Image 1: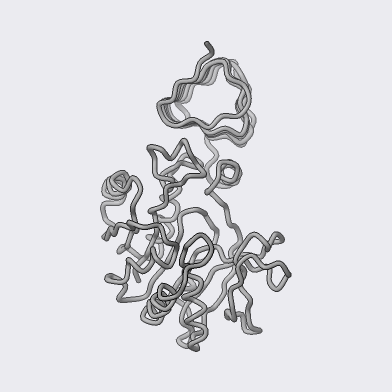
Image 2: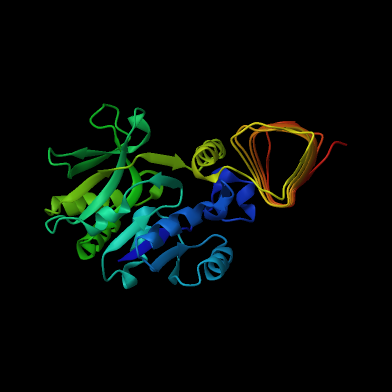
Length: 332
């Protein structure tokens, strides 16, 4: 099995943090978003991956080489952002066996090992989650046996509440790419994009059986507010921490929090839902639902629902901010 992971997007909704950092490498719960996906894939025994890159690709290449040296990575550049089908099409030269396809906007709790137990008469798995606000998603309409009948984008009627989350296993890779070419030969959809879900529909129309499988959690990392919500989930489950060598003097700490090694906090109030990365220095800071990058310096601030990049220097600010790495914000 090989994995395909598209990483070429510019992350415009996460600016200014993504001016210098690819969105998949933004941190949540103290780790890059991408690292959670890679660890899930590797735990399944997959070590060969096709990574679709573009924007800030050199940063991504260096990260993979440094942090995941045992991964056999094939990098392919997506020059034109023409949608999910266009991205996956670029992986075709390496797609000669079973495929696991994941998009890096979300984290999820799902049993990927189902890919190894799929009955012989089924061509793949689409992981999905039941949602109430179905109008926001592409939803999967299933047959009685749980296999896909069709996918409908943002339905106005409640034909299904089973949202497609962007995690797929495809056994019949040849039929998948036949469907991708079929999709690319037609007019693009909304926004001039070609959708991978149309290729799945093609597969089903040709008789393929695509199983739907549940996820127990699905956590968006694509917007500032959802990244902050996902941080809360991680802190309350697996990523909460106050490092033994963190210095906390005269400050109130309200869990859940993550305060990493070398952090210094003097005065103020930290939490709930606050991640402070290694080496940051805070003096009289009141923080709630905020992520602070490594070696940042905050003095006399009161912030909520904020994202602060590494090495940023912030003084005398109140409210909500989103600051790129190395930003300096001080009163006149």
